[in-house]
Amino acid sequence: MINKSAFTKQPGEEEHGMVIPSGYPELDAWVETINEARPITFGYPTNNNMDMTDFYEWFFANGLYKAMLNNAGDPFAGTGGYALSSSNFEHEVIEWFAPYYGFEANNIWGLVTMSGTDGNNHGIFFGTKYLRKKTGKMPILYVSDEAHYSNYRLADLQNLEARIIKSDIYGRMIPEELEKALDTTRPCLIIYAMGSTFKGSIDDQKALNAVLAKYPEMEVYRHVDAALFGGFLPFGEFADKISHEELGYQSIAVSSHKFFSIDSPSGLFICEREIYDAQTDFNVIYLNNNMRMINCSRSAIEPLKFWWMIKKKGYEGWRAEAMQISAMTFYLIYSLKKIKWPVWYNECSNTVLFKRPSQHIVEKYSLSAGYDERLGGELAHIVVMQHVLRKGIDRFIEDLKKEQTK
Ligand SMILES: *Cc1c(COP(=O)(O)O)cnc(C)c1O
Image (cartoon, rainbow, N blue to C red):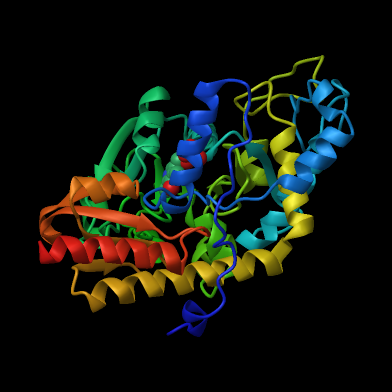
């Protein structure tokens, strides 16, 4: 579907202003490089047109920076213990998001994490504990070769046997390859990629679940790594692609410094209540309940920023941004096709793959590089986030054209 807004309104294309001196020349020079790079940093899934100004004004006006705010403790166990906590707001953030991922309001547990990786760490940890409790056996972790590297890293950290499953040309885990790799005598902890890192592909959960359903004796735990796509999918045309109700996964991790535009690493982890209940008790008298999650001290500020964003933007605001991203993705694909530059993309995705240009252009736009024989070898991608706007895309296309005529 062609989205007409690709060619009309373009907020946020303003130029940056002068550097305000800090008294430290090396800092001032650094600010300048950041301001120059910000609007054309295209290869990574972060929004570089964030605006937390009103939050910071409120925060400083009230002297909140004087306190060591800390959300150590379980956000679902009420306050208690450390008084300088924002855990009630953290709880509200999880409750606000859960229905958008298709969870039932009274059947959840979750927290605001330190990152997408921290959310995956909880998914893998909780999944392992849950499956061991049920079967007495260690699970095998299955994940595709296109998924984010953190999943392999975390399997190693948690001493799990991991089986890396081949993906197809679009980057989706191949159901037949999963079936070949299965050891049905051990429980299965499967990670589904929703927005694989390089190709922006979505594992076909229904097809993969159908493979797993052939072995009813095998216990299964499904964790969804939706660090990037978990941001915009619930607010766009493809909300059912991420619905827990529709797909039946047990937990999901999303980064909040990607689509949600929180300006420091953080994320969401949400799971079914039953999964939380199956975790090992860990009673710590000076905290508010038994501590089943991984970390002790956790940020109190990221949940506040998130809560602020929910009030300020909410569903409508994020929906408008999801629509803008999809329009700009279309515009980028259209512009590349127009100059006959080889380009590939997946459905529902804001990640656009294309033949890798010169190193100069790769560096100028912070493109990230990849490689796939099946797509002609050297590739690069742009992740179309909120700051990737028509003006920047046009500038990028002009640079590619110069390279074509050389
Ligand atoms: C970004 C990303 C991660 C890692 O998330 P962080 O928040 O950077 O730790 C994991 N998986 C996917 C699919 C990602 O896009």
